[in-house]
Image (cartoon, rainbow, N blue to C red; front, side):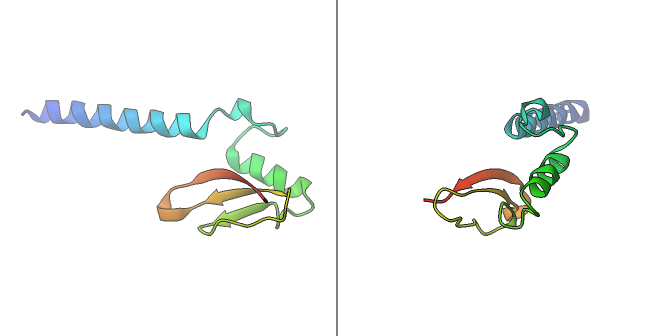
Length: 90
């Protein structure tokens, strides 16, 4: 296999990984926040609008357990990956 073929294969695999990541994150235009410039800006808006947000936005590796009916945005950073998960208390 030539170096050119290997590079083409790697480039294709990288493009597929980027596209998969983008589709999992979603479109910024789909955010229900006013600020849609970035995910960080949207999270900061949520945090500010919830009176500081310390109980409504959790960043870390441990899933929060909110009170019944309360929703918390959990930014899961397990394993170096980042997931945004809306957790609702039972």
